[in-house]
Length: 348
Image 1: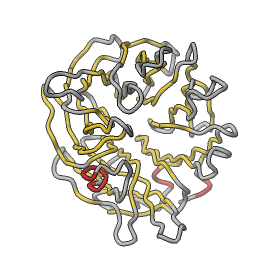
Image 2 (image 1 turned 45 degrees about the vertical axis):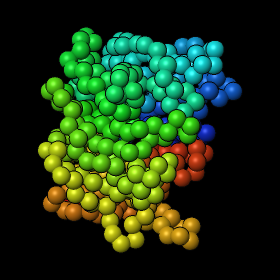
Image 3 (image 1 turned 90 degrees about the horizontal axis):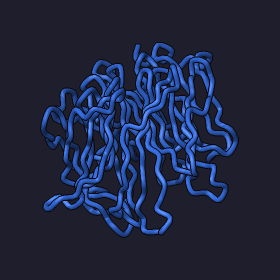
């Protein structure tokens, strides 16, 4: 990697990103800490631009609401804001926002109240955006699918609903491309608030189809899917990743394993764009010297580790950009890095 072409954006001391999404060199993220005693953490959406090496606050919630898990497309960002019921019932009220990045115009696409408890409280909606389409999850239990949700795909401009996809189980994660939603779902451990008996689903047109079992985090770009598979955690109700593996497929076909062997400990946080899949791979051993590295895969070049990174969370933003989040100092000096793919030795 050409280090001179790696851009950085430092987060303010003490700030830790929660979930990040990228489009080209731009990254949106929320912040760890909602519900802290100051009432300020976790109430903002941030926008970093690695090409300009800038960081701005995109949105600040009112009334101490949480700003939650944003996504980004070419000229817009989307996220949910929510607050817990003051009665302590565990219910929460939520709204889904879309904001144009050029004008700052902000629209509420949907709102509601989630009442079903997964663990000690209800779960906020997930939100994804791609072009003029936005997808969000709404509680939708019914006989025979008591843990069911509904994934709604609507216009990000008008809010007009294009598709409704009912799910059989609770949604764990989803991603959107056009009108197609790739998501994972599973049963819920009500006491410890984790999901098990997982499966990967694709929803398009008027129906949903199962693609694979034991899938957790997912990514989708240009018809290439990537997901984390962890049979031990899914089937044995362990509540944590044991030996997660990175799988990928094109055209929603059968998945192939692309995380490395031997010395493989785990794969995390898949991302895909430009025909490439990226993830974080743990190559450490049992002696406590674990060190995460960025891994890249393409059909032409196979799997290669990128030497530059510590505890990375990779982000392929498309448009030739690779970004990653380094929080190895645990919030003291968290940093976003970014470079173009042509600055790497891979692909060559």
